[in-house]
Image (cartoon, rainbow, N blue to C red; front, side, top):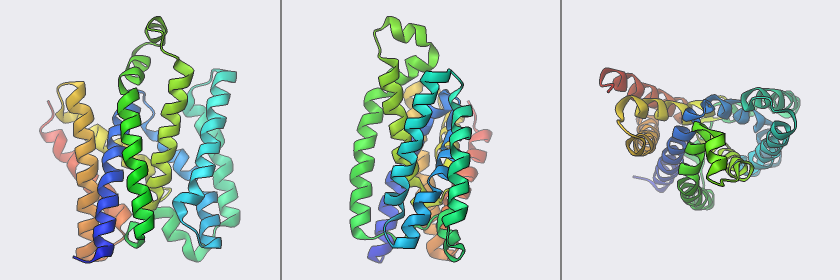
Length: 254
């Protein structure tokens, strides 16, 4: 097993697992598809990264953070649903991307390419994803309560705005890391499908969160292993592996 493949596998399992874990929160809030528009919002940053030769996740991160902050501010100002505000913000990102994007390098932007990750990129990604896991674990119960009832959360003296900002920031990080794996087009599936499969198989919240994390990591490993055997792009294979697990979960739905 060569080092490049091993690095890809480690990063894929870590990012896929935590994406599934975060997806279990997003699905409960009916926000799983928000990752898709946010993935599109990273496209200008990825285009700049390809033009100037730096890491695509590094290029994606400032754009998705800027988008998240705008959505958070607009939500407080307008009281419109977060999904609607996300759709408004991401359209401008896509337009800018099409102006900047080198067409010859479009595949890496659209479907990702985790198989070329360097050791430094892998180390940074794993450290970030571990920190993100502990942050999401810390806020998980609070966000679940906010999802159930904001009034109830307020009665428990939970600062809803602060937790929403942390929650949105967590989504931004997973999207920025996810575009390296599956590209800007498929990011929503990275968080939504493992969580959906886990919901079919779980009986309680703990099983649901843990199951989403396991399915996310398993899907990533299966996709990357299939890439090694077939040579097809790893990003779509990861999503197809996740979809297969989801279809199996329907058979065994509890």
